[in-house]
Image (cartoon, rainbow, N blue to C red; front, top):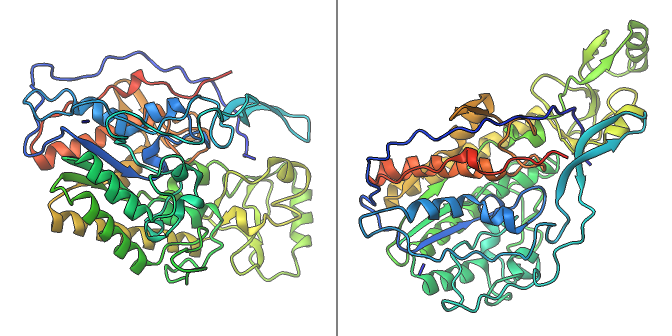
Length: 456
């Protein structure tokens, strides 16, 4: 069995390069068996990109790339097809229309390339409910966009998440119960788990508007605020239960840790010091406007830090290291005085305190994931370090990839999720970790051959 802040964008020309690979090295499984591969995860594992789920996104997910490379194993322990994902029916987006790169005109008359919502009809015919009639309803990639580790303990979760509702056996049960059912159905010999990103990301995308300490109480039984960080005790308990489920067939596998979400393009496209003042007289006007407030004010001709509302609802100037979310409306900045005569609302800002909450939590969660790898003898995939390398620019077969929005070539237009090339790069990093731990020799895929962002 197998409303985004717009930046000017120059067209990126990607060179056609052949991957550097030693074709004389046989592909072997080493100490693992890859015949039945199961992927468990959230948005990052499902193929979600450009703010929606599309069939091309699913077919370019990193689990799909991994399966293809597992198929190349020549010693009899490679993957056997088919690799089944709960595919939607088209490329326009489900349940929301996807983002595409288009032309936008702003309040001051300026025109620029920017992500816009596609005007094509939604993929609704056949997308809402997925039923696979073959191989006893086999599904190899059971990743759910937006699911958190905490959500695995929520009864009836599929009623709260359309992506889960599409293919769950019993929508009334917990995701943990669904996981056990899928494991029993497939009998995986190898698995990957990439969960936990959304347990932190919801807080970050909300501008840090939750408690942020990992100790928030549930809104109701087992349903935690999606705009907050998952409590540590809940995370570790649920993650442990997930691992018991996926390893119930004595399968081997790899656990993928959590990247620093604050490094994503979504949080780094709008510079906190993006307030441009073209004359000193206007800088003096702003200095006088805020003269009655106690924060340190520095307004000079040139680039300045925006005026924001912080997490204490105080008006002040942003400081180095603080982040402005990509969704802050550009028209509000250009024509309504946001960031200058009016503070940018706190839901569009990550302050130093909020960023510390995020980074402390990721460090704690990752330490737990690494500990579980050692305890259960699983490969540990340090995707956090990989993303840090990507943020400074990573050369791959003649192309430099980075976390720069659009021009970096690895992320989709939502600024959070990877595109096809980014997923292939992640697959290669996972393969490196698998090869190192299980003494296998699985070849990498050529990330450059997959599609990037399509320019109009």
